[in-house]
Length: 593
Ligand code: ADP
Image 1 (cartoon, rainbow, N blue to C red):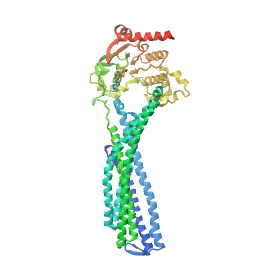
Image 2 (image 1 turned 120 degrees about the horizontal axis):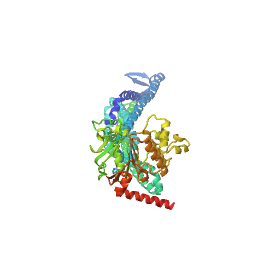
Image 3 (image 1 turned 90 degrees about the horizontal axis):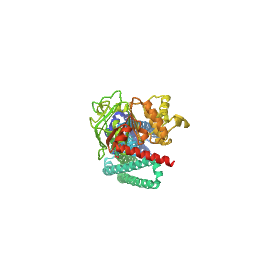
Image 4 (image 1 turned 45 degrees about the vertical axis):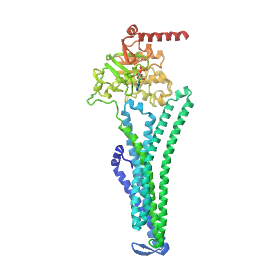
């Protein structure tokens, strides 16, 4: 049994299934405890030739065996089979329902969490919550529930019968059982700690595997397979040690249980044998008593299993609870309203920004204005804050009040959803899903037609490339789109953003992997289709941005120049240096060609 804020609700929600299961379980326990009494009758009948039933002595003959032994035994066996089937269906069916609901809640909450959460919690650790941890919580929930009540009823029924037969013998057999419960509680606590360490080791291993497979190209290119293997072995070894330590604790508990159980058998045989010798008990009754005690052994064993299972379940539930309780950092203000149709005017007013875990301001006193419908290029050295700046427009992080405005609305006064709905984004890593090209392009637009997908692909100069694929738009992309080139990936991402046709389009270094000819085509198409809508383009190549309406030059988190390419070339030394350097490189490149 496992309890906690996130699991208690399921006991209530599925109470009817659990009660039916419990009813079947109690019936099975009750029937099971009739069997030792049948043994007693057979043994006493064989010894004496007669059997006492409800104070009446009946001859032990064929009729008695058929009527009083075989028929009830058959009924018991069939009823127990039916009962066991029923309770399994009820408990395990409930576990599957809880599994689905809990998984949905975990995914749903994870989906709402902010970017910063995923920077701290790696994919591998999150995956182990959805696999290992969820499994151990459900095990405690369903099997734990069943074992708890089975142990409770079976031992209560069996002990009642044992007490009725001989209370001294029963009391004697309970002494080791009490000792067992005390020691099992202590070992249980120790095991919970070991399980926590085990899960942490597993999460580290799973993080590492996930990163290694994602970065396999880098590992191979740098011939670092051996280094990775060594690091993996080390983590795997830690995982092994954690597993062994947990298993040791678990084995210790089992050995303790066995020791106590065996010692009780010794007591029953010794003291029970003495009672038979004294004449207080007969042989049949001793067998019946042992029969009841055998029925108690399983609940006692179950207690140890239950402690082990519950300690694992509790540790896992704690981790799952942390995910379910995690709150997004970036949320709507209580009075936030939808922004409504966006024109595309953006204004930064003395905005300074530092990442939540950062040590310095990445953007410093940034002020500029982009008019609705303008084409703006964002330029500057790597690390100067370009991506950060556009991330803020998308409200990926919190900004102070009164520093960032869209269409004159403070971004903190409008809902995040409505703001993001008005933006299309081509991120730097161009993440593609393992779906078809068409599905990737139409990702942002529900119910789009093939013609619309084709139009977006044409605008991103992707059309002829797609014709080359055997299955055209229905070509499946591998994990992270590995079956297409970097340039194709960029253009699929651009097509995906263009398909949205949003009032604000942000392209973060999105044409860096395409050749200049393709770049020219894409930029021409962008100018045509984005007329009247705001477009912000981050780029390093001057050819990409020189025809933009306006350029913003960022230097170490500050906007140091705003103007056209020609104006910046005249007035901004940093920009001029960058342009001249690129010209030189191009000439050098051409010269060598
Ligand atoms: P650019 O796009 O111009 O190359 P970025 O906006 O990506 O620059 O980064 C600007 C600065 O912010 C860099 O110093 C970078 O190390 C830092 N930075 C970027 N992302 C984060 C983050 N998630 N947490 C902390 N610092 C970050």
